[in-house]
Length: 309
Image (cartoon, rainbow, N blue to C red):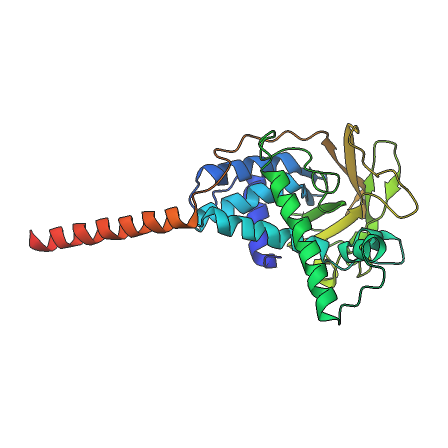
């Protein structure tokens, strides 16, 4: 998770159209377009701005490409970072009390592969790691399935609109020029996902209504800018139907009693439409190294030529 300061700067720039500090390459341009696709905002008469990003898998892929482009990395490093993102979700800690731990990859292994799995046993641990790595490899392979564009609405039944079967939102709050300083310590409990059937769901997390303690907003009241994250499992253990289905036409995020607005509603029309990527893959690490060596040689030659003049 990036630092709060960096994330707030990025959200502000992307949301207001401010110029970003890094140079814009083709993948960065796509990332910004996807960011606009997954973002919705609401500014009330009280002057308080709410901006929410639905972190779809396509957005995360676009972000990984743009970051690799800015850092001049090759395809191998890009895929490594995508795998790290996948691991962060499949290895995440999810609460057992509401049944969402059924989505844990570790829990799935215990149920369907080895009910007597003992992580302290080196051989069993190695077998689990191989099984886990194979799952990650299949997801990465799904990204690059030649039958589909890189950025799309669904990759498999867990990755698409959801990140490992979870609808993930980052919600940015800004008091702007408002004179209000509303209480936000419990804002997670007042944030709801509403599906097409009008059913409301509260977020699930290990720290009250936040995924982790670090995901809660800073401060007890809104005085400036802050953000928080919320997860909504798209299927619970006692309900085989997803909260948001593949044929649903929209979903909403609602926030109650923030400032002077009783209910703020942000709505995403589905399916989301994504731009085409400028290329399916980045240059390999070897190609990047060769280009950098050539550029260094050219700079050295120019410097030597300048000295002899």
